Image (cartoon, rainbow, N blue to C red; front, side, top):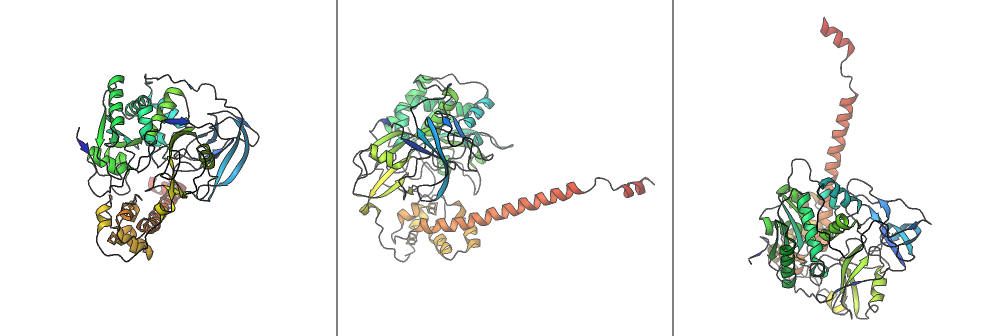
Length: 475
Ligand code: SF4
Ligand code: SF4
């Protein structure tokens, strides 16, 4: 099999897949769960339950707050205890529904059996509606509502669905375990996505360091007999699983600045999302749980856990034996793109992929020194940016120059930071500059929209024919 990869930049961190051989374990529900209203890109969801309400597993507790938003379902059965702000993993307040767990009663109509359902319904509109109602969002990091991605704007056409099974971030193994243990469901999910997008070909992209998953998924495709689905073996290279890099590797097409994958005919979904699509369409099961890795050299028990959405981090840690005293830092996600956890009382979200524990030594940063203009950061940048320049512009908050140098295109992969011999915290600094550039772009777009709406309103307010002029013209 040939191995494919993206064109420019990238790095090769050690993969450290410590939990790769740990089978997925089901974590029992916590005594209390906290469902955040903002766990997807777009408008926060709006609660539709009240304090004191009894809820079942799979019941809608919040509805979408806009077009780009998603339903949220109870991941447990019990009583709604509170609705209000609660601190997230970084200590910022986010609106949450707190549910005290009582038993484990599921909503009727959800198929909880292990039976594989391979026959796909033919009505694509009904499929997309099922995915919407199930609150499915992208589980590869972006948490973009999946039904929106599956409804391309007029004039755009999908030519290929890509299922991202690369899991290129070090330490993470949950997608790998899902491919091994739920490969059938993932392949049916891929077939559903391919059908919905117009029976287009579908590529399941898996990095070469997962030969068992490559072999298993290839066998499943042959066994289930869906046409047009293939496995593509990818070279091990970070950030291979990033959307634009994956499209480049699979289709040899470049997604332009600010453009969506559909602009080059691609729809990319993660392995976990394909599984969630299967669950939604074939089993009527909303997105109420996901698989995450719990890992790190200092963590005594490596694991891949199926966790109900809204489970407090502390509960997961206690289940696995408690916090190791060597752990100095906890990260939600991988070491390259994950977020530091400062509040262990925070709860998992639909998109939580891992809890990673690092020692003080592993997190210690060498002192920053002056840039030696080696260009390694630019060589490593998969977006073709000049990180050394962007960090300079970010430090002086030169918004215009940041935008001109495409700071808004930074995918926050951290390759520049990883490569810099001067240990300059490039990503941390560039992230601020990216915010400035994006702020300017959004402000301009909002002003243009407001001006267009004002012009439209003024046009509508004009009388269609001025009576006196009309009489004049008749003369
Ligand atoms: S973090 Fe941004 S600037 Fe740095 S390598 Fe990645 S895309 Fe380039
Ligand atoms: S890698 Fe670091 S030292 Fe080298 S050019 Fe980039 S910022 Fe400067």
